[in-house]
Length: 403
Image (cartoon, rainbow, N blue to C red; front, side, top):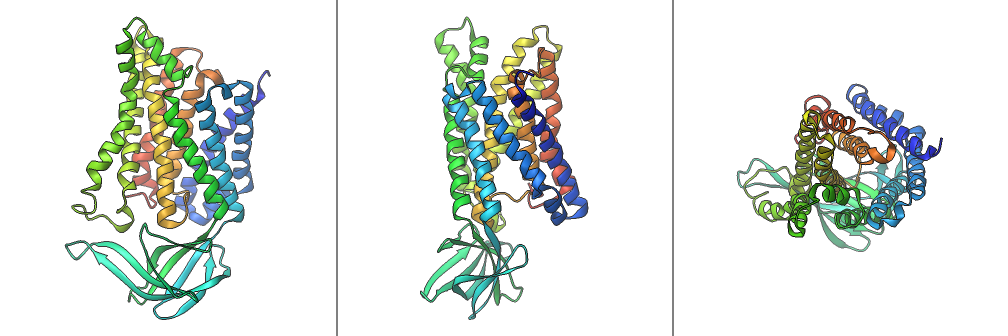
C-alpha cells in the first residue's frame, strides 16, 4: 500500500458520516443526552476526528499540497477549528444561572449538574419582553443586571451578550411571571479564540482559492475554455464567483426589511440571518445543479467534459456550504454561547459537506477512474442535501426545524 494515509482518511470520513447520521436518529428516538453520551461526546467519536486530522495532514504533505497556499490553508483551517472544539470540550465551562429580581446570585449550575461559584455576583434589576408593532409577537427579551461589587449595570438580550472577567452571559429563558431571568453561562477563553482563528483562516483561504494557480478549479476552467479568447475565459471563470458576490448584495437588501416587516422570533433578528440563509440556499442550489449536470453527463457522449462543467459548480457550492456552516456557528455562539450543539440540521449540513468532499477529492483518492462514476456520485450525493433541507424538518426536528 503506497499511501495508507489516503485510505485511512477515506475510511474515517465515511465512518464519521455514518456515525453522525445514526446519532441524529438516536437523538430523535432516545433523546439528546443519549446521543451526546453514546456518540457525539464519546472517546471513539472524538478519536475519529483526531485520526482524520492527523492522517489528512500527513496525506496533504506527502502530496505536496503545501505548494498551493490557499488549498493548504483551507485544510489547516479545518484542523484549527477541530483543535478549538477539542479545547472547548476539555477546558470550557457552560451552564445556567437563575436570577430573581432584586436578588444577588454568584453561583451557576453547569450542564453536568454541578454548582460553580463566580468571582462576582449578578443582580437582576428588571426583565422585559419587547414586542413587534402588533403587540403579540416578541421581538426581544432583555435582562437589566448589575455586576457586583462593581455596581455596573449591563443589558443582556438576544444576540447581545455580557462579557465579564472571562465569562459570557446569554439570554436563555425567563420566569413566566417576569420576576426572574435565566441566563446561559459560558467560560471558554482559549477554545473560542482558537476556533475563531480557524474561521478567519477558512474565509481567507476560500476567497483566495478561486485566484490560485494550479487548482483543480482553475484546471477545469482551462479545459472548458481552451480555444476561447482571454476575455471570454475570464468571464467563464468569474461566473461561479458571482454567486458568492450575491451574498453581500442580498444582505444589504434584506437587513432593511428583516425585523421591520417580518415578525421574526428574537434569536433570528440579526444581520447574520440573511448571510447564513443565503449562503446555504445558494450552496444547495448549486449542488442541485451538479446533480442535474451529472444526469446530463451520464447521457452525453463526452462525459469527461461535463465533469469539468460540474466541478466549476461544485467548488463554489462546497465553499458556500462551509461558509454558511461557520457563519451559523458564529451566530450560535453569539446567541447561545455554544458554536456547535449537534442539532440535527447542523449535523446533516456537516454530513453533506463531508459527502461532497469525496467528490472534490475523488480523483486524488482514486475513487473516480471513469467520468460516469463521478456523475453517478454527485447524483446520489444530492440525497444528503434533501435530508438536510427537508428530512430534518419533517422527521428529526430540532432548533432548526422552522428552517
